[in-house]
Length: 246
Image: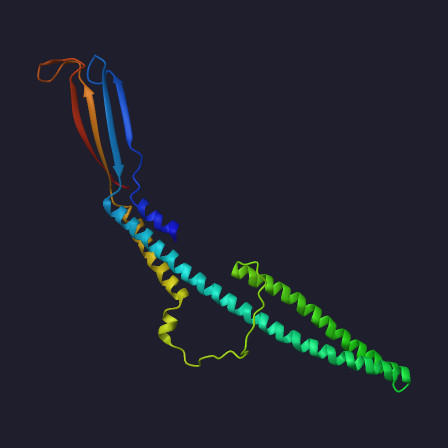
């Protein structure tokens, strides 16, 4: 946005100024010299519309900041509750692991006492192993989610989200005025304004360009008024040009 704002000052970008010098038989048999300077520029409408376009692009960049902030808040919220969900899921798996650990101990004791067969003991081991595997996968998922959370917060602190209420309360009624104020819709509307400004700018470039110049020359010899001049006498002229796009 700062970059786009600084570009507004460059809306009036003039072409390079031309400076020319001539020496030789310009006016007569004698050698003369001439110095000239000229400057071309677009029709003033072009510069005003270019400034308007830069203003619209700056507004678009400013609205993009609000949209990026909204996207970041949404991503932080989603990651926060994803971590809360994984924490609660981990508690349930740990509780299940404790239950199946006790079940495995009892199955092993029953098997050693001859009160059950190998099938019951194998089933208990398999169920305990599945819980262990799920816990391992969940912990790996949590580490990835925590890294993403640190990236979103631009922090190296290892945050562990906590929430008292796990139910997300949604409002069933939708306020149409709030929808109209959504950052994404604002950006799209502003991009439309910028496109219209760009179209007007391109159309204004069909207007003629202007050129202003100044020349200073010497005339050695007899002038049109029958007066003899030397190189110390200077003569001036102005130049006006009109560039018409074909």
